[in-house]
Amino acid sequence: MDRLPKIALPAVAAVIFLIILISKSAVTIGSGEAGVLYKTFGGGVVTDEPPLGEGFHLVAPWNRVYIYEVRQQEKLEKMNVLSSNGLDIKLEASVWFQPKYAELGKLHQEKSEQYIDRVLLPAIRSAARSVVGRYTPEQLYSSKRDAIQQEIFEETQKILDDQYIQLNEVLVRDVTLPPTIKDAIERKLKQEQESLEYEFRLVTAEKEAEKVRIEAQGKADANRILSASLTDKILQDKGIDATLKLAESPNTKIVVVGSGDDGLPLILGNN
Image (cartoon, rainbow, N blue to C red):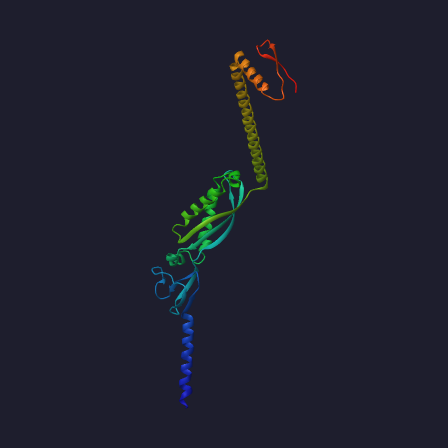
């Protein structure tokens, strides 16, 4: 019984040491994350093996695990850039990205956990300045928004190609021009719209006038053809046909009194 406390004390100490050792060695990696292993006595950052995946892991207590989010992330960046004619433009862009999973160790070793501030944001700023500098404020404001967005994406992708970062999309959310330039562009666009509407009305009126001319010409041609075909003989035959129809009517009395100057009979009738 006297020896029990002497045995129990080392046992308790061993249990406590084991608990501390496990707590220092246990690493839990959450959903959408991955871990980069750093071996203190084994060459530093592990780059020749896949990163640690989601779940529970045991590592040597003298080693460290750096956890990275590897699912798609978004970074909103506001910047001032210059147009082709040197005017200051405020650009707001959203970047969708994620670390390249298989190269996460190299990303940590070469860029560190601050890779967003050290690599990604400088790349998007550089690409935006390069692309926007090719366009005028009017193009930025109206017709070239989609083209600018695509070009910024392509320029940024070139910069990040060997930086262990996967660029998924660049979205240009807003382009803000100086107020005086914006007002001038809006006035110009309004004038152009009014000019297009006026030209449309002119074209419509011209087409309508042409339609009326064609219809009138058609009627004139028809009348000319009809007049040319109506000879005296035809008119006389038409008159005789009409006289016969009147004679067949039960409510009409017809008296033929010689004939008129045009060779047609004179008709007297009453009801």
